[in-house]
Image (tube, rainbow over all chains, first blue to last red; front, side, top):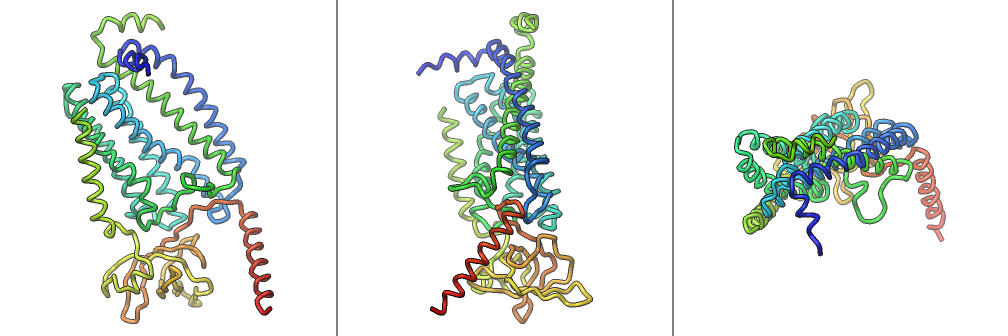
Length: 246
Length: 146
């Protein structure tokens, strides 16, 4: 297997250029998928037999919740790569994930809370799913806080990478919390063996929204990672040429 | 590399052990079988979860008082409640109630939450499913005497 493409990505100028070229390829499809998903989910999909129109909050809640864990997985993977291969660009990617992931987590918690009030009868319960998702928010905030507390970038990278890796243990807990324990939160509608418990008219817009969130995350991550690489390489000579290019 | 592997392995082991230890403690609610097995002390506040038995809901005229039975299809627990029920509360659906058992074994709830399942479908589909089930039940009932 040829790994040169991977090693070349470790070079800041190369990463900066490639990332800049890729952004529109994620951003525009993200916008299109979001428009299609919102029209389908808020307009075309039928109401639910139990929850009426209120269930439509899933078109934001579910993608935000999925991305909150996916962003963490990306952050921890990048941090691991940065630790193992001492790759500065990977640390920059990890550092760029945290704030976006924290926002996804907050959106998932807030929309879930607004959904919980009319359906369950409460804004919040110390349910295993809700609690583990809240822990995820604290992991993100802890990661950001740790980075912010260490001035030396290389030390901040190593310390925060260890924290990111330790926090990975929370991801399976979030995912399986509704199977392992009695919970107020519903079980899996999508990710399970057999058929999704949802007709295509509701499911397709949901999958479109999830696609839109994934693409949006990729685009915003690249924008942020480019900024982070620029900040780290602010004294390097390649920057003048790279900026002049545009 | 070794450091990262050590962190991942160590944390996984610690996580697995912690989960084993906490397995019971993080139960959000007890089901009626656990209550029947005497896993809750009398007077202890806990959450009771299960299905509302069909036909068990009795409302007191002129007040919010309501009585119903919660089941996990093995055991049942009678519940009494005197506040407004959530919209999704209905017979045959899931609930989680917070409260304590009184001396007669009735669960006196001070909070009732409705638990909805993971199924989503349009109302027409739910109606036709219900009719299909009712027709099947009627058919099996008429066949039974033979």
